[in-house]
Structures are given as structure tokens and as C-alpha cells.
Image (tube, rainbow, N blue to C red; front, side, top):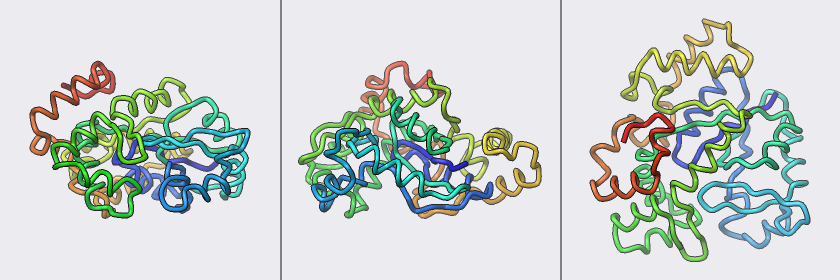
Length: 268
């Protein structure tokens, strides 16, 4: 079995990646996301990675893009058994079928959209290599940038999808029954402002999905080792958005998400 550690950008992919690697899967640098095509040399990447092929599949989340089915299938089939790789990938039946055919199981991280909004703003600002960084920074100020992170819009040649649209299609992984959903807020445990019991349950469920459900020693090791090991944890606390998200942006986010917040188990 191979495992795809999937999330919406800034949704905690690296924490999920660490959990799965602690369970004995080997980290692989392969990644499924829009940057397989987007960014520098985009036309060349489209040509060499099947972007103009007859059979294409949509990948990515913020700025989805099409890639060749055959190219992606070859890359997935080359991954060794026991590998874990990361992804930012919304749900579709074609991607689900392709992953299943390549013996790839999917674990999806779910994170409070309010935390994602503030983390997304910070990450794009401090990541010049990101393909839409210059267009994001050209916006007037952080209020405009945070609004863009929430509502989406045009960033140069790219159309950023709204956070609500990203979540609607991402949650189809759960509805399909083809992936395990893990909440970031459960996985961080006490060190991240969460609960040790919920962390223990989330780890046990994930290990069970990965074939290690009865290994209590492994579960204890994972719980002791999982948090705070990656530089992409800006603060890593489940409630940090409360002091960082201005009231007008919070109202904007709540209005755009509508019933999605309570559906995901997050209070308004």
C-alpha cells in the first residue's frame, strides 16, 4: 500500500505526513499539486506532463490545473510499496479511480478554515518562490490579501478559488467514503492547544486505517513524537485565529462558508 497525505494548502499536510511516516511509511518527495504545472516554465511542464493530452485529470486546490492521466499514472506506479507522499488535491471520481488503480490509499487532513485563512496569508507573504506570490504582494495591504485568501479572485494570470469552494470539493473525499478524514485540531493534542484524548483517538484511527490498529506501543510513540517537528508550523495552535482574524474578515468568512463550518464540526 502507498499513502497520499492530502490537505487544502495550509491545512496541516506536514503534520499528517509526519504521522504516517512515524507509522513506518517511507517519505517520498513526489507531490501532487498545482505546482506540478504552475509557475516557472509552465508551458514546458504542460507539454512534458500531459497538460495537452487527450486524457487529463484535474489536480490542485487553490488554482486547479489539468495534467495528463498517463503521466500521473506512471509516476504513481513507480512509487514503492510503503511510500507516503503529499498532495493538495480536491476530490473527483477520476482521481479517486486513478489512485485506487495504483494501490494508493488517501488520508485527508481537515482544519478549521479560519486558521487556514490567517496561515495562508502569512505563508504566501513569506514565500517568494510561490507562483502567485508577486501578484498577492501587489495587493494594497494585508486586509486586501486576507480578503483574497478568503474570497478568492484574480491574481495576475491565476484565478484563486474561494476558501468555501475549495472546502466544498475537498469534503467530497469524505462523502465518497474513499478516504480517512483526520482533524488537525484533534491531532495536535495538548501541545497545540487541543486534547490528549482526542489526539489518542485520531492517532489510533489513522494507524488502524494504515494496518497498525492493535499496536499500542506504536500509538504511544507517535503521540509522543508527532507535534512541533516542522518549520511550517507557524504557531500550530488550534485557537490562534481568534486573536489574528479581524472581525470584518471573520464575518466575511462565516458568510461565505455558510453551513460548512457546523457541518465540519466547527462552531461559528
